[in-house]
Image (cartoon, rainbow, N blue to C red):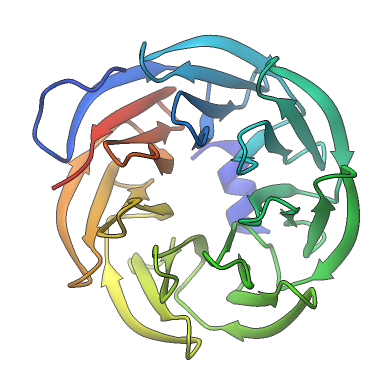
Length: 313
């Protein structure tokens, strides 16, 4: 397990192939962590530790075309809805690097907290929520001013964060799932889930949220939360050490990276069952879908590559 993960848990071109097949691997920087696509699907940004950079992948070409230096130990990345900016969290620096996508350069660095990890941007593009896992807070950045507008106390060691599709709620993964009312900027409830929760994603219609439970005693699952009731309705067994999760743009399928078993579990959203398991690289951490849903990129922290998976059914 890489240093970044140990500390956190303690404190190509698409080729003709069947769905759920790795069609290519793309070398990126050492110890890749986060991945996200520009809204137009032309580029993917991948964060890497040592050196601390963002690899910019040209999706059509299937290769890295540039590398952007950022802060110390970059982890997560999110784009504004218009695709003009990328926000990259730097875990050791406690900062967010703001990248101008057009020029491929860092235009500002925002100090946000201690142990900066997850980032998500509201659907309207007005705010960015950033988790600070050593100060147990979420920093709320005003995107227009580029400044921290407020700080919200949450549970211990907050990791990832996601917004409901309507932008009314943010789910923050800490010791449980802290539900933030975005309008008031306050935690309204905390939902108990499995052991060592880590990643979170909403279904397209916003009715459910999936939370990965990394586990440590042989229990590796995904908790399915009914958003209306704020209750866990089911638990889905997946591979060893599930970390992050993404839902296809059509809402039919969810992909889960399993760090401990070097696989991606494919969940059918309608039935709530794992329908297949995809071998990928070593130590998969994050996963994201192209906007058209044709492919998924999974970062492999130990092997230093991105697995390109042909998505669909």
